[in-house]
Length: 191
Image (tube, rainbow, N blue to C red; front, top):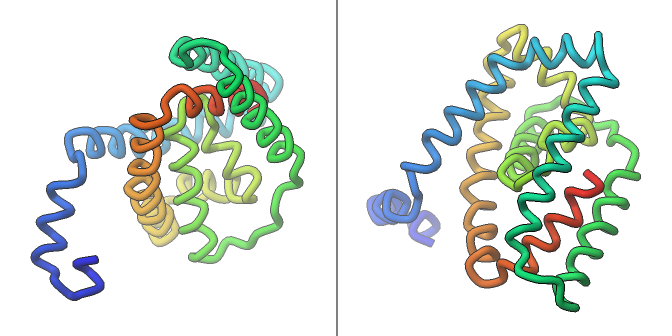
């Protein structure tokens, strides 16, 4: 609101007050460092040992689903309904063919926004989202070749995505924790 009204000083003060920099700075640095250091390793593992690599990721996601399930708070009708909704949503999502999107700056920006949202959800794979958006291999090559323009566009999209989605996710956890966790377990079982 302050930005639209061109009250830049108020906007800056509000941003500094509202954003949990103690959480986001280490989180973003950790994600960035992991992506930069592991991109070549993951490329190698996927090319050389695809079945073992996917099995390892499946095990990680399945164990994450169990941990998230502990936070559901019981299996009442509402929680089971949201678990099934998450499960069905994930089945539909997984059944989609990868989008044949190009690699323009707006697509890379949007991919960064969506992938980071998946990355902050427990057990949801940001890499899988990038695969569906036809950006995973491209972004791995961008990182390996240090194409800074694409990296900056992707990171800016991720920054916008995490700042906007984290507020919505925080609201859901604070006001509807049980059904949110149930929905996530349903997603995680499939994704």
